[in-house]
Image (cartoon, one colour):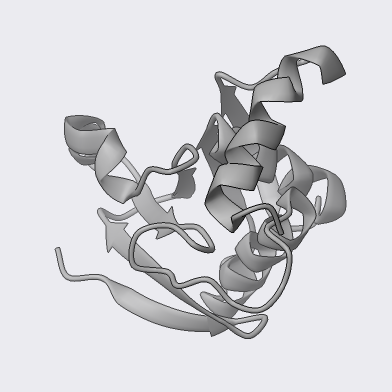
Length: 141
């Protein structure tokens, strides 16, 4: 599958669209890419349309001059759903992608139908490692 770039919020976001049916947006973990889902992506796309995204500063989506924040990446996801003219989409995220998916549902409930969170901390204390990861990704910015 060849991917495409979509301009959203000043970002050239890379995504791949697989299958047909109800849309499922798939968000990878920190320091990963779409490829982390491997054969799962093929299985999921057998019964629905899967929109797999490389988030800001990951994989084929370059970084831009703005903070790397869940809230901003959530805005990107909502903007992409609207750009693709989808009424609503299910959103599934793993780790960092799960945090972004959660923020997308909170900030943009009008575009999120169902939410699936995988390996996401449910207490603030559980997010300590995420701050370290964010510093590693952004070089301390």
